Image (cartoon, rainbow, N blue to C red; front, side, top):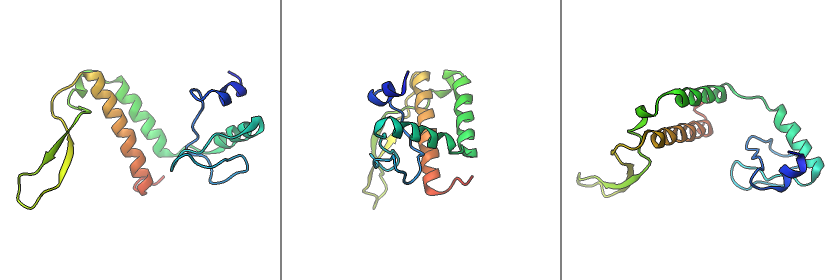
Length: 135
């Protein structure tokens, strides 16, 4: 696929979440982490070069290897990871807060595995943002 095809199609557009703070080819941010795609063919090429220069961190390799290991394990082990939530209120006096907790009922293994992988990635990113993971 050529550079022009990738630039034009929003479905195949890459997200550069680790891009640098500011550069002449950046157009701003579409969220806290995602930077907008650059304009023009030259800007696209500059963006790809900048992304290639960024080193991968040790924790990213650990996460990738952990996800690979999960992918190889049988689905049967992930039946307890139900993505559905239910509202729960403590019956202890003085605790009026209602929280959402995951259901305890078993689910199909493939769904549980998908949930487990997404949770692992989500928590890894949150810990990285909080500064708990130091590379």
